[in-house]
Image 1 (cartoon, protein in one colour):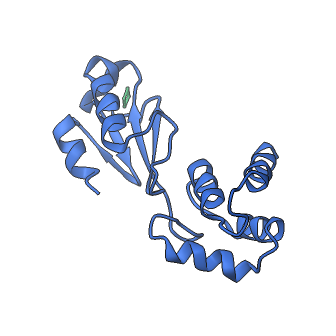
Image 2 (cartoon, rainbow, N blue to C red; image 1 turned 90 degrees about the horizontal axis):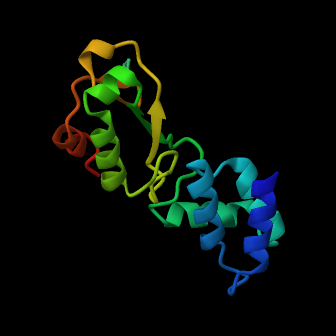
Image 3 (cartoon, rainbow, N blue to C red; image 1 turned 90 degrees about the vertical axis):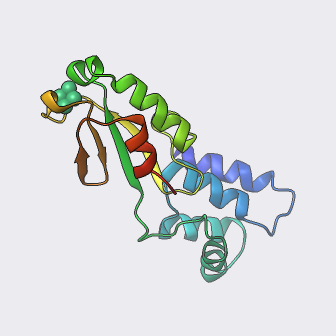
Length: 148
Ligand code: FES
């Protein structure tokens, strides 16, 4: 509910009341993508048609509508992985993606998270990207995997 209030506040303060880009970027930053419900909400609050908001999302390549899934990057920070250098991996992930833990990249592609153990403690540091777990992660390998 807080999110909806914040969106309303942004809409009220828009310099150009006809330009929803800033609102859509805010939603994506918080949710990773712009859902149909959010499109409806923004359209209603800005007195627009849903399709007009949808067209704005299509127009800007960095905006994601429903169906484009966000990729979760989970760095294991539990004991064994931490002893194997996962803190360094987490810092590297923050640098590469330009976000803090639980942050979503500005293009809405990745969300950086931490995880307490994948059950593969002997092979750490471990990072899960999407559905895949990568063992013995290094900053260099991570940089290659997250290349945009
Ligand atoms: S501590 Fe990282 S997988 Fe178990």
